[in-house]
Image (cartoon, rainbow, N blue to C red; front, side, top):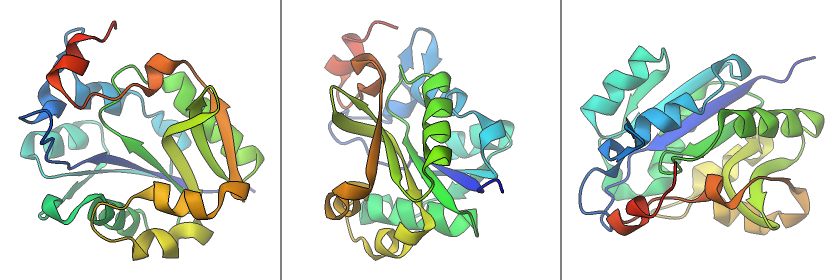
Length: 191
């Protein structure tokens, strides 16, 4: 039996350290949000939800035929984005959470992470480099109640730390896990 898997693209943050909507910033001629959506292997997911506060990201999500979920309260923190995403997926057996500020993340790595999770569907699966966990992460449905209890800026890390014994990692390059939080970090990327 194929386990149904949903994907939540988290694109709702205020990017305070960046100083503006970083998702519109370009790397190699393509915006961060476009690169994030291109990294999602749609055929692997029952549903893909893009949670954002930005109208242009909602429009882009619809062009990809993903569910566009408006976050009216990004100031409530990442926990609210997680809740909106999970609620929009319905009854999936697991959910992948993918951040939208890792512009060098490869579609092949996301697909390989899905395969790792499918081989051990009771486990939390995440990309890593040098044994250090990064994003994206896949959570089986048994962890959804804990994810829904998160508050403010507490994200999936909080749940993972409680269940380290349930975590499996897939090694990828350091570059793929590099996130862009400042204009300086963006300038330092080599696409």
